[in-house]
Image 1: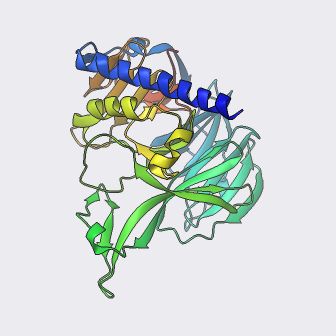
Image 2: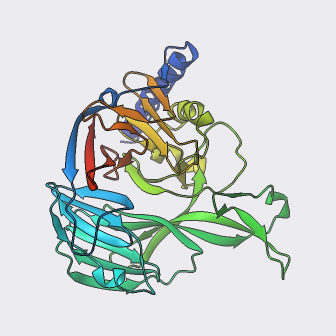
Length: 366
């Protein structure tokens, strides 16, 4: 039995190692094409438009955090959580009592697609569960000494939350060069005590009753180079074959291509084989890891938005300063492609026509 297990492990290492070698070999021989312009049809097989109906609570604008479960579409709009169907018809407004409270607001939400529930976290760190009709099922308080909750998702029967924690640095030699990047502080001294503290991210696993099952430190994935800050902002928690990982969009697209090549070379071995290498910690990646495409977007940078996409099948890297051009509906350039699901199989973008917001659902090539 042990021999079979060892043989399987060796086979996995050889298989994934060869794939990593092949990527690097192609890269070194300049066989990877790098494009500075691209059409949406280069990565998408179809696009489906959904004109969004205006609910009684007001026009739909400032849209973010769009998620889909079958015929159900959820999104945040002006601190409201809105529910539509695939025809764009307004269905319900879960957590309406939070939206109408001037002292509390919806911080984020996620979908429990297994049980067709919406899980909402508010500014007071209360977790509320609703059915898709908007009826409250339960509410509980998270009692954790977290500095800030950065992202959360539901996966495999558990709630996963990334949060900033402040930890004292006992070895002053480790306190090197802390920066603040886009409002994310990586470390600072305490003025009263003189102690040095480091702000780090941890990934917490909670059960359905909000009890902590486990937690682990989030580290920056090995990208083959030193960077100037220790703890970037977490944009999303996503899922691949190895489990939950964190995504943080880089503020500079200069290194995304080389970082991605390094990840493909060294992070391609399954996570169980990386336990000893990273002591069980979970990585923060500069790209979203889909089955075929690795993608990163940032439209919040003034005069420097970007879309990066690497096609692992055709070995094409798109480094786009103005995004993909929509050749399906001719809506212009798409500067902000966002995933509709935690597995990065479906994306979306938003456009307006005659003041009607239209959600375009993009199914990527497989």
